[in-house]
Image 1: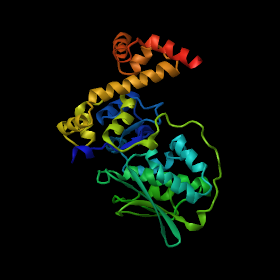
Image 2: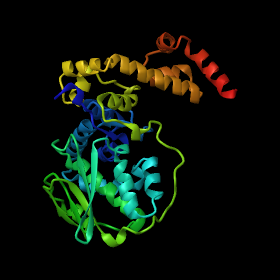
Image 3: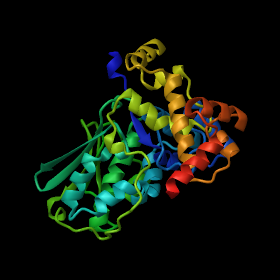
Amino acid sequence: MQRDMLKIPLVRGKFLFPFIEATCFSNREIESLLMKNKLPIYLYGKQDCYVPLRNAVQFSDAARRMRGSYDVGYLLSKKINFEYLSDKSQSIINGSPDLYSALHNFSARAQIENTDLLIKIEFHGSFLRVCGSFKNTSALQNIENFQWINNLIFIEIVRQFAGNDWMPECMAFNAYYMPSDDVRAIWSRCKFTSAHREAWIEIPICYLSMPPINKKIFGKENEIDVLNYSNSLIDALRLMLPSYLDGKVPTVFDIAEMANASTRSLQRALADSGLSYRGILNEIKFNKAMHLLTDSDTKIVDVALSLGYSDAAHFTRAFQKIAGVPPLRFRVFSKEMMLR
């Protein structure tokens, strides 16, 4: 793979929650499983954080096997709802005049939920097919877990216009998939088919002009504007690393594995951009520190711990080296500037 083509596809951390909850494990056991799969160990309260899709898929399968359940479709069908989407995605959908517009608006902004997700909308006889595929991770083993999530997201979008009891007449998967009896019981009016080029659901054309049932619009948007995400390696690191800062931060070797590349290729790719992994990590820590010092009253010691520093003194020295002033003085100065 060429160095300028290195990518780390990401997905919102909230989509790990159904698998975490399904394990019924203690917090320590869950943290151990997350750490084993190179994921942030502290996810609660970080619904809008981003994690590597490859690692999320591996974790979902590990959680499935440890639970002793083959078919995650039953679990996800019970858990995934419209509120799993980010506030920004919900606003985009509820602010659309009709279902057809909502599907197009969401497809153009799907990377808010999954940076690797590609959505196609095409007419097929008297139905509209909403197709989802992964640009860089379609060959991953057990990817059907996240194909299920994609199809359920599409279904939840339709339900905002057609009602909560709506279900598609047909649901397709890219991976080979045979639903269990429990899944068929939930989706009694739905036909399942697999081994397609894409995963998709079918929507009757007559539904497309339906207006939204609930026009609730969220004022708050994601802290990071993912719509400006370029799908580059640098953007992926800047988007995902903040979720790791208060736990075990990935090593260069871990990052190379996430990018499906060698450590040397990763380091050369970063060097070609005039950056280093350590430099990017320090930049992310500094930006988060500025945010916490400016927009909250979090104690300096708690800011230090949230950034992975063992004590406040270490954090103070690192911050002053970049900012030129210690954290407390920076906070006072920032608040004085805001009052002017």
